Image (cartoon, rainbow, N blue to C red; front, side, top):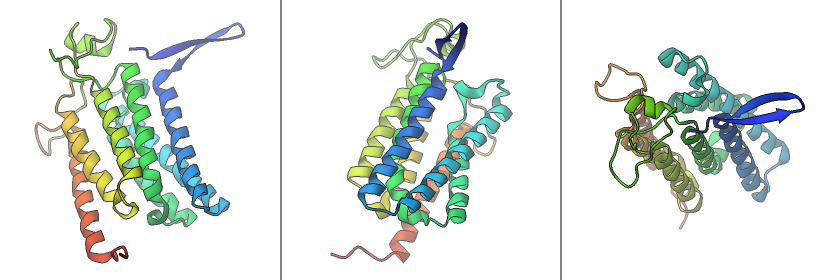
Length: 252
């Protein structure tokens, strides 16, 4: 839609990809949010620094896995505007677990305070998708429909018609989920609630997606992201079961 911002530095001209800029805003939101809460809880500064290292490792791991899978699925030369977010989340989770083990910062101690801000950071990424014109929905006649410019990917796929702004659907969902996790959900339940809620919410949003997302033959008719959503939902159920069985209840 508006994929780049033209800039001039001296006599040189260039462009800033808006998707990348929104990812940067998301990363800043994540770091500042976790830092604020950790300092308010009077955590040790060195411990907070190690949390930052873990978050940076998760970001790099997620970015790398998203770029690699996008290359494999789409063969994109410049995948910034159409990166695969769900594999990025999985890759980031693996990198986060590995980094937490390396820097000896137990995930159950600080991950609950990071999850809400991860949702807000993810929402910035979805805004980048909207501005870049990727991850659009199916054609619709509803008042929610948005018509992208004639040179957009959505227009080249569906023609000059209104489509579901699925990027904005997910943005609003992520903001609501992040707010609920931060203000309503107790720390010990945040991981299971996130996995269940995001898995279900993203699965439903995928039903009205209208872009090419590749395919997996395991469950025909489901997109690759919906396959990963099923893993999220199953993981959320298992985490909730483990917490109810093995974690001590909060004192009255």
